[in-house]
Length: 491
Image (cartoon, rainbow, N blue to C red; front, side):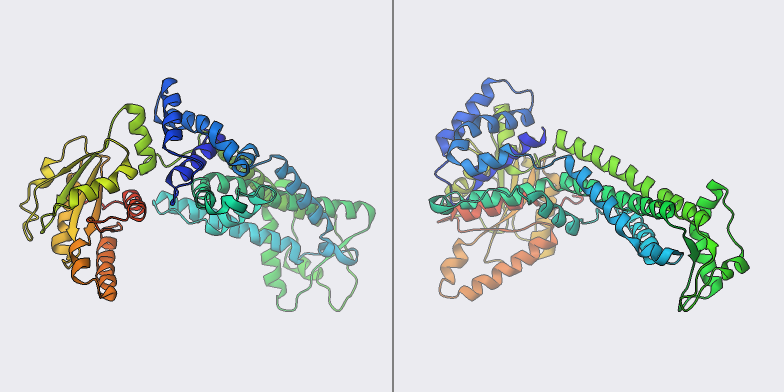
């Protein structure tokens, strides 16, 4: 799936999952888009999802012109790289403090600042690579936020106005948030391309500026410092330009020769600058221009790869539901109560919650209740069929969650669930709410205890009043829990 298809899919996802639902996209529209996509016999789920979004926009586009216009725009223009490079070269040429008063100061800030900044960047890139190797991805939040601002210039995400603000506004806001989340790798690669190109161009500008001034003026070389001794300055400068010296054959002065280059109180410099201009230019080329150019090319290639093979989170409930449509399958849900047998209200309430999240035809099975303290002996999890899509550990809010009991039960269930099946924690509030209806603080306190408990399992709890469920809110919570299921552990 390429970037354009992914944008269309993400927009449709936002309209199909928005709460409250938008009147611009209804059940008849969903069925129509699904039917057309299935008629084309898609090769796989991703192809079906892309084709379905393509057909859906034939109806949704005219109803949402702002979104349609945004989809028609290009989010990236390769000419940006050229513009950034040109700006970097100009800025480098104008950085004349390196060679002020026809004298090249070997300790001038532009040169050392550029080298130091690039050294920091290389260290950060190395740290990022090590973090990825250790499976601890570094968070590029600042870079991604910068990229988002750049990409939005003149290409802002669609927003609803007028009457549409109250109907399509939530869908468009959800689309914006979802798109920036799923496009993060692509945005990071494009931002890296711009930043590396700008850094290489800035160094090129510094080099060009050195030679242009050297052609028109007779430059001399010197150094001066308030804090650095001759030995320290000599060691620093010669260490940095040593590779350039070895490559070019230009010799470096010894300590006494370097001391002779020192000037003070505005005294004129007398040593010729040409050898040092060559050394400084070659140093910038070796340590900035070449590495940053290579990194820019690699980032551009990575961006092209991501744009052509856009990775949507197909494991999320929304996409899993569409995949089942393509395969002609239905979701199978197993509910395993713990300590408290569900009342007569439970099954209708669960069905009302599961249908919007998993689709029509969802099959629901409520297995035997596991008694408190018998989670290790329980065989209920063994009854899960291989086609189970979702396993629900059902608890009662009246109970106080304990890691040794409820936690052990949920983790054993997650460990024994079939591969690909998510395990979530659902807490029925019906009995507790009836008992403490006049004490909302008590309800909030107990909910917080279950949130802390669920967090220890790596998930989020789904609170539901199964006797009278708030379908929209609970469905969103269920989808979030399915994206963050109970972590598996050894059974």
